Length: 206
Image (cartoon, rainbow, N blue to C red; front, side, top):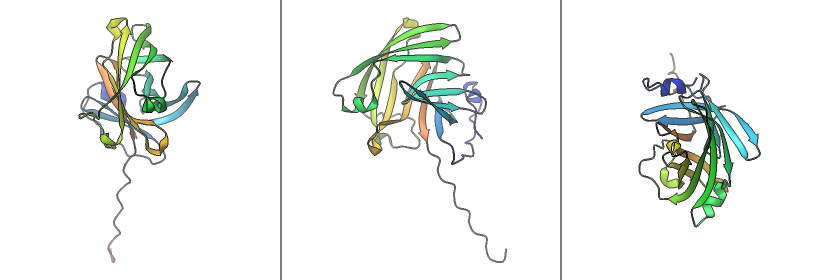
């Protein structure tokens, strides 16, 4: 049913769009010029919030907490565990007039790199011109950029961007651009497949 993230990361040809099942929720993931769709497996309730666990049919896993990447499994580089301190809620960010700061600590594989610390500053930004959104108008979202300073500096990452929808009164990340390393960056978009085209009725007498 799903294209695999393994196929995507190995640099193969673009995978075809899957036959979407309306009973599932999907995540559209773009890396470079290639696209893969992942399906929501379950929601892991944790003290810091609900973590959405997305997977491919080959076993790759992406974990998102309020749109932020908090873990992966099966990629060329994985974040095995992520811990936050002072993490701002998106509802608070929507009302903030100044940049907000928080800390993230992550463990990476391969190489057994544990306890990498990122000091992150979140800033509201104008609507970007080059977001790879496919299902939502960029101008309909409120945008934020998060820049980090890492310890060690060799683990530093490019800035992340988040597109937050305020529809329904509860802020929700529907799009983001995040990097696991300098060499592995991707976008995540909450994806609602288009309804299937109606089947034309057969002509009388056929």
